[in-house]
Image 1: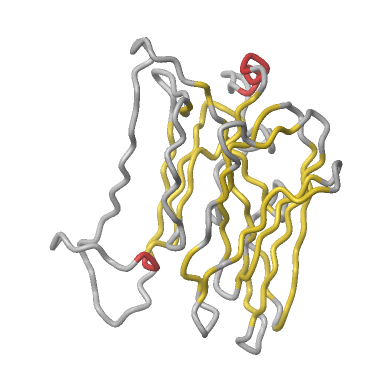
Image 2: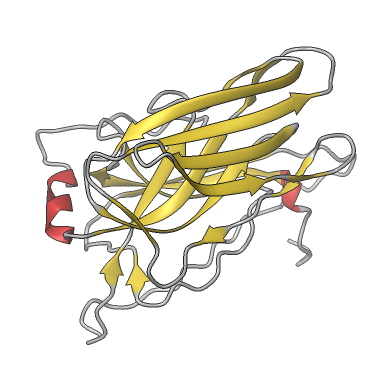
Length: 243
């Protein structure tokens, strides 16, 4: 309320879900539009694309702060700025779909972090062909690296190395973009994600780790995604607090 920007680490997370569409990687879940934590970096501008919303769409927003300082901020608030373009503007955009490649698959993102070096991996079978524009990543403290691979092609897509301080506290994660053409994925391709940690605390940290590579996906045929709309008789898994 004093108009001063607070340290980024005070933001544990903010997350947006579309309650009228299913996630294309995890159809049992609502579509996870956007997420950010204290380690997030600004994405470079992606001209010509946007996230399509419709009149009446229900957007769920959840946020959590964690203050590890000795000062109190009783009137702190979070502000999220969203650029938008009206559908009747005459300047069509290609629709992007958020892609959350979580090492825990479609389950709860959090898992126990053992002491010392460790790694966790997961895989996704792509049900749609399209282009991945770029990826960022989400780790917790003691996180070192995220790697996204195309298992089918035996090729690495992106390697995201964490920026941390000498105590292992996460400071930032990089963003990798794949140029105007993007990285094309075929229907049926298997993508793998791997998170690497080195917990130097000397003890297990319950629910102390997550490993998620997050990107934006443009399908070859946007009409194929129409089935992801949630009907009145269908439901999806409510947003998990840990994501």
